[in-house]
Image (cartoon, rainbow, N blue to C red):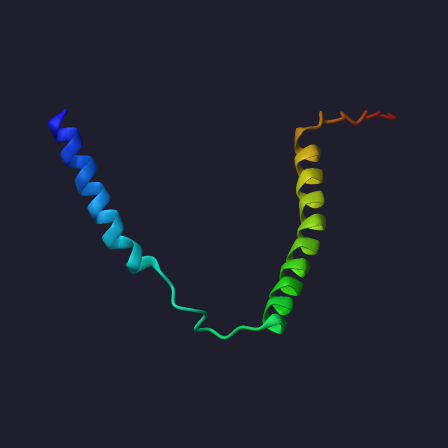
Length: 77
């Protein structure tokens, strides 16, 4: 029980020290609304391009897994 208390205390101390390491001081990139609109537009283009790609992928998977039709060969001799 004493070991668990030591581990808990060490975790608490280390987590309070580590919080300042992950803290951000403002936005240093300076990106405004236009940057976010541009990134959203790029994401929209990628999402729209994924729709036909997925349709083709599912079509190929359906074609591969579909049973093969045997063609009838007739010999006219």
